[in-house]
Image (cartoon, rainbow, N blue to C red; front, side):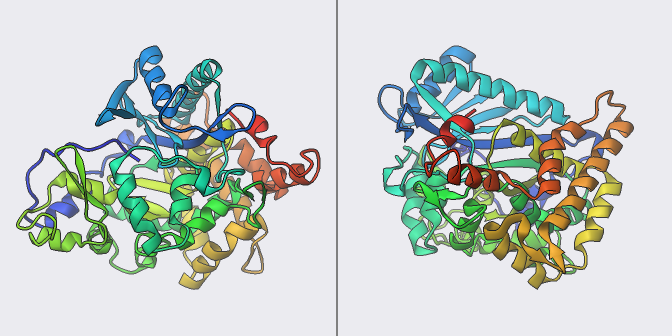
Length: 455
């Protein structure tokens, strides 16, 4: 989640401005970029306890060390550093102290993987001195929600109070999950629509390939990706599959209509988050927001509001792929490789569309429901999700080869897919691997995960 916005900007006077905001994302293929984001759990010492914000060695001090040692610029909320920026990259905090790198928009996966490696080297250098580590998994394997410290960010206080009103697992989403995402561009409205449909339909396949959250509070939880399951009972108003994306006539305007109907969380004014939870952005657009009577929204308010929707694929001025659990270092580079291979090559995109275009709304709903629990073994259309995953990974690999050839890359990006090739062929996800270790050499303990899957 991003740093606090500014309150500058002109009031929105016309709904068309909201559509134009999304249209600003259109750009020619030569300007398409890759933005990778990943979150990780911060833990302390031999007991692997979560790290609070305040105090020696706390999250606040960790952020301060990134500033002091590596030149990251602090972003403050009150007296607290709550984010860092460096160029077009930023580091931010999720509600339970999950540490997130939102990478710069880069040209190749080689670059984005180098960025991840540089960041994790900084993490290790500071961690060795302050006595913490960072873990790559989709759900906190050991600690109850009550033991997770909350970060001092105003928007999280509002969300913390609102979440239990709309779902039973929202607070777990906020404090105990981690993901890896990639943000990708589109050339036109038609290109956006096709990429949105393909990526939304295939998001459960990515969930199965990246499944890495089989534990909760020290025990198996019955899921391959419990993180993905959590989103099914977080807030139905702002999560899920978005069936309207597959309807005739879908485009920027239809997404704006969806966004206008998603209840608000907050308005940021003069350094403070004003609680607007459950209120209507449509009312705000008409100057009828109860907490700011007579005021019209600013474009920064619309930009903020767009970040409070959590579907499996999210549209802003780019498309965000949101279906994957966090995992070890190599998996962080595999996610952009998968989606760049599928979406940034025309032949691959067409082939991926051929796979999903006949899927019904019920097919997609079945995958969304069953994949978090069964992963690659999920039955689907006379076979399993593993069968689909093999085809999808093969298409992505060809897409990366085509991309390299057309761009004149001396070294293509296909090797970043190798972890997914192995998973798709074997049917053994990271969750499967972890469960085998739990019942074998880990002897019924999740503590070894903090060594084996730490960065």
